[in-house]
Length: 178
Image (cartoon, rainbow, N blue to C red; front, top):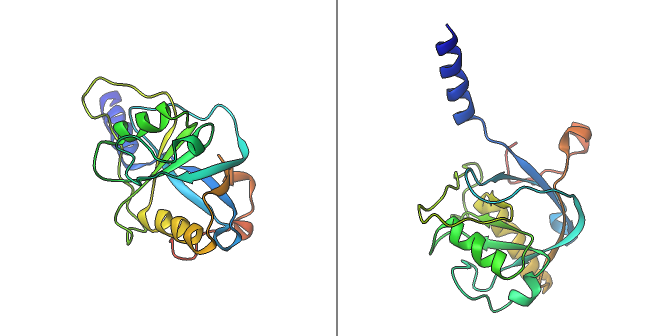
């Protein structure tokens, strides 16, 4: 019986994601609470809550090598795009530029519901900063808003405890089903 319970717990843990939430504070047209999932087996955790920190889109967006805007990522959070190299490689590039965390958005801009499980790349390397996966539609909408406003970054609050917010006050992106 105990073996069956352990097997059931194992199956449940594979199906249930741990979610982490952040809120865009500026620009105002995307002032929503977004859902992200932490990397499964690499990266750190948030030890503090950042009330206001910059979310800086990496240049180049895939962040597989030297960043032309790495100076702006130092002590901030980078927004990078999936593709070109492993999730761990992207996380290490942002960490090497002094970033406090990385949010990796799917490169499928129409993805508004499928979370990819970010795992190690078998190189035995490590990363210490938090790494989160963001739906492609959400990443696209954030970058599009920044481009429309001519802004180099968004201001976010992370992590956000959504259990303390009444459901009717949750500011959810209108394009995402919760």
